[in-house]
Amino acid sequence: MPSFPAHAVAPVFDEAGYRMNPDVGRSVDVAVDLPIANESKAAMPNAARTDRAVPSTRTEATLAARLAAAFAESLIGTIVFDAKGRPVAMNAAFERLWGATLADVPTAYSILEDTQLKRAGMLDDIHRVFDGESVRLSPLQYDMQAAMGCGQGRSTQAHLYPVRGFSGDVEHVVVMHFDVALHPSRESAPDRIVGQAARLQTLSDALSTASTMNQVADAVVMHAPAVFGAAGTVIAQLTGDGRYLEIVRAGAMPEDVEEAWRRFPVSSPVPMADVARSGEALFLESREDWVARYPQLLPVLERTGQHANAVMPLVVDGRVLGVLGAAFGAPNVFDDEDRAVARAVALQCAQALERARLFEAEREAREEAEAANRAKAQFLAVMSHELRTPLNAIGGYAELIEMGIRGPVTPEQCEDLRRIRVSQRHLLGLINEVLNYAKVETGAVHYDLSDVNVRDALRAAEALVAPQAHAKAIPLTVGDCPRELAVRADTEKLRQILVNLLGNAIKFSTRDGRIDLAWEASGEYVRIHVSDAGIGIPPHKLGAIFEPFVQVRSDLTRTADGVGLGLAISRDLARAMGGDITVESSPGTGSRFTLLLPAAKS
Ligand code: ADP
Image (cartoon, rainbow, N blue to C red):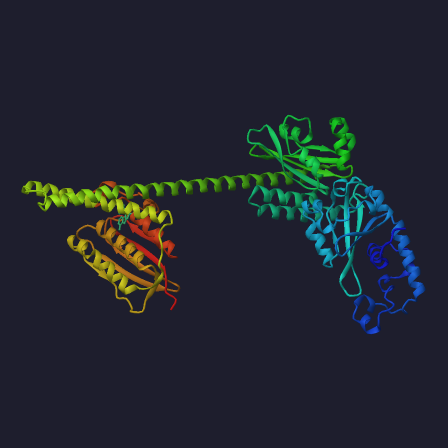
């Protein structure tokens, strides 16, 4: 008889309703606590339940012997682990079920680190048992050979119970294995429908939050077996050229089998490939079904302990993306309802996979576009920099000649030189703007944030654009601003934005126009409005004007200067400081640009 801790096995029979003898009563767990003093027993809930006399040592011995016999002779394969997850006892039914004995278990083995259970996503549940909860695991196909180097694959459902010692700590964990090949689901029909709806919902919830291929695969492998009542599921996808099937994830498939079938031609005479080619679901209800269609695969079945399988195509818009397979450790009749559920699961799974594929494609495209944008900005930065040097030289030499340093200059030559210098300055201004944009885009701009007085900022910007406004005889008014109003910003960048907005307002105003610079403080933000009564912007262009190099009317702006970068730069700067720029406008009436910035905290 294997040695085992009597008090560990007792609750097994208690919980499962398997009692050796009605005389034993409910509280086998009190039986072995004879040396414990009365007050410490009172602290133990289990012990406190005992209203009978404390059993004598003889009773205890009898009880232990009976329990030992029950454990040894029980038809339920049972194994007991110590607190570190190492097996300390197994009964004959367990040995028969798995074809392994306690001596076969490698000394380093711990159920808390079991790789197959880990891959099936069950380790968290198992840890919960070691923390004191009872747990019933989903059916699982387990390969004892792979784990212990002996024994066989089986599909079982395990019930796990913690057993606390007198200190209250979990000292042992008892695991009872129900062979799902011998014990098909005991759920009644209504229970089954309700249970299946709940399990389907769990799967749907998991799929709806999965946004990558791996997350979809994890959700399927973790939750689909419970929906089907299967031992495990496998999900495979067709390669881009449609010639191979690749396993994305396999739950509870022996590692070597999974490795051997990781990628196989879609022309292979196997169920998954047949389903991928035909686009039709395939249900194999027993090994006889398998032998009739795929006799060459019998050894694989025996190796994995499978009896029945459901294989569904994953189809989106009439395109087969891959297949979903469910493996059963016992023969299984798939009635119409089972088949409908299987198809529903496959449909959800296919849609989730497609969604994940689109997400991934979109993310890749965005990353590529961002990389291209960065490359473009870098190119612009280098080019502008290179252009500035010769342009400065042109300006410098023109000035030298104009000043007569190189010899006498005629008045006509002087006028030509002046024009050269105006064009040179204009070109330099444009290039500086491009360089500025490139710097902002490549993130090379440094922001020196401080509390900036709004009144000072408005006045400084006004002073800078006043000559331009004056030249066009456009009145520019600045709203009264309380002394203490401040925003959190970089002074230079704020001035740059205001000058750009005011410059545009002047540029796009007609002679009888007017410009207002106003402010508004609300909550955590301050808004600065730049309003004009100029030409306005058509509604369909309102979004585009913030894009680089966009100008609404290039004929007008050509004469009015600019390359269409001012707003793109300004908005980037504003956003980098935690604000934004928005616009309202109507053609012929005017525009109002609003700069939003965080208010200073103090
Ligand atoms: P730029 O002024 O150099 O062309 P911006 O990025 O500053 O570039 O502006 C982009 C375009 O938005 C301008 O070309 C013009 O068509 C439009 N726009 C900007 N501000 C105004 C405004 N106040 N009134 C009318 N249109 C404007």
